[in-house]
Length: 365
Ligand SMILES: *Cc1c(COP(=O)(O)O)cnc(C)c1O
Image 1 (cartoon, rainbow, N blue to C red):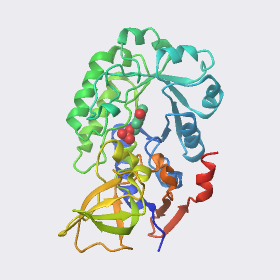
Image 2 (spheres, rainbow, N blue to C red):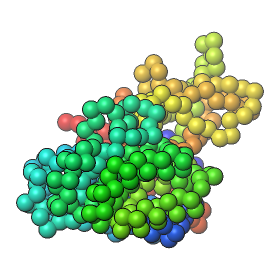
Image 3 (tube, protein in one colour):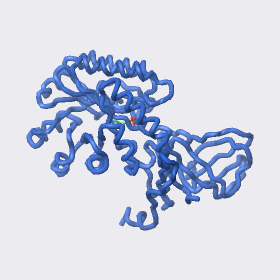
Image 4 (tube, protein in one colour):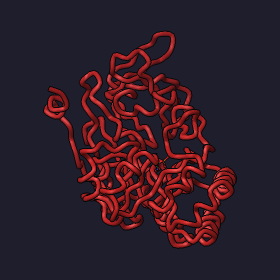
C-alpha cells in the first residue's frame, strides 16, 4: 500500500476531459493551451500534450516549465515583467502577451520581432468572488479603454481576454462574448488571434459542447482570428484525489477525525474560498468532521457521512483535488508533503514524486 498522504492523478479520468478538449479543437478550430497556474504536474504532460496545443503561463518559471515539458506553443504572460526577465522570456516563448500598454511600450523595442499581444479587460466577469474577479473595481488585469488600445493596435497581432471564472453556463459565456464583440469588435478586426482565456467549464457534464463550438467558430470567422482557449480547471477537473489516513478520532460534541494532511497546506484554495473538500460516496448514518493535522484551529476539510464509525488507520479520499492544489501546496507546520502518484492508462499505479525532510530544509535557509 502506498503511504499517505498523496495526490492521485488518474489518467483515465484526465482523458475524459482531454477528449472533450480535442473535440472542441476539431469542431471550432480553436487551439487549447493548458494554463499552468492551475496545474503544473508535468509527469502527466506526456498524455496532455497529445490533446492540447501547448501551455500558457503567468510567470517566467511557468513559461520555462511549459517550454521544457510540454510540446507545442508556449505563451508568455505576466502581470508585470521585470527588466531582467526579458531575455529569458523572449528566448522561451512563441508569443508574449503584455498586461498593460505601459509594459508593451517599455519592452516594444526588445520584443520587436516577437508575436505580441495585449491583455484586454472587458469589465464583465462570471466570478462569484471579489478575490478572483478580473473585472473587480480598479483591476490591474488588462487594458479596458478601446480608445487607448487603438493607439497601440499596430504593435500587437492579438488580444487576450480572461473574464470567465468557474463559468459553467454557456449562456453567460455567450452573453459576455457578445459584450466583447460589441465593445472591441473594431479592434478585433485588426488582429490575427484572440485568446479567450480560461474559466470556461466546458468539460463539465451537460455542457452544450456543440453550441459552444459553433459560437467559437462564428466568432473566429466574423473577425478573421485564430481563437485560443486557456483551460486550467476544465482540463483536469475531477481527475485526481488527495488520499489520507485517519490518525485519531475524538468526540467534542461532534465526532471528529484527524487525518495525516491539512487543508491549509495541501488544499489551500478551498480554505481561501471557504469551501469544503469533496468526498464520494458520502452516505451513511455516521457523521464526522474531518480535520487536518496542522495546528490551525480552522484546519477542517468538512463534515462527511460514513457507513460505519471511523477507526484509526482508515483511508479517506478527497475527490477533485487536481486544480490549484499541487501548485499551492506548502510547508506550513513542517507537515509531510503529499507524494504525487499517477494511475496510468493500463491501470498500474506509480509513485512519481516523494517529498522529504531535505525538501523542507531546502525550501528555506
Ligand atoms: C487563471 C487563468 C487561466 C485558467 O483559468 P481556469 O479557471 O483554471 O480555467 C487562463 N488564463 C488566464 C489568463 C488566467 O489568469
